[in-house]
Amino acid sequence: MDDDHEKSSPIICEIKIKGRLEQRWTEWFEGLTFTYDDDGTTTLSGPLPDQAALHSILLKIRDMNLTLISVSQIEPSPED
Image (cartoon, rainbow, N blue to C red; front, top):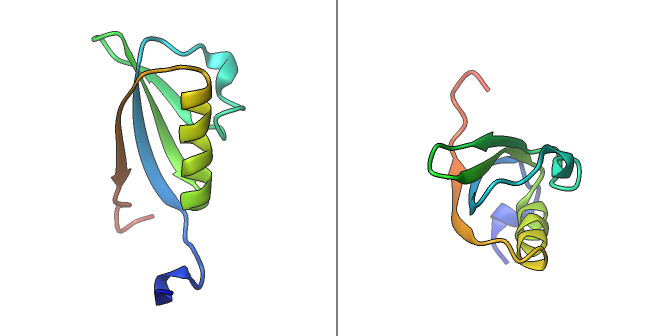
């Protein structure tokens, strides 16, 4: 096992899905921020505690039969 598994630090993610996901789902998606893009997609972004939380979000996207466009990890700025 890698030394990286000792203590996970939060990760900042940006997940893009096809269509518009209603704001009422924010709590179910770990409080991620929803941004609606001009191309008709929704971007979910914000911090997640670890990779397990990210996988949980991706499972919810699958279970809701949403089309996943991309998943990106955002590097925090030095001020964070």
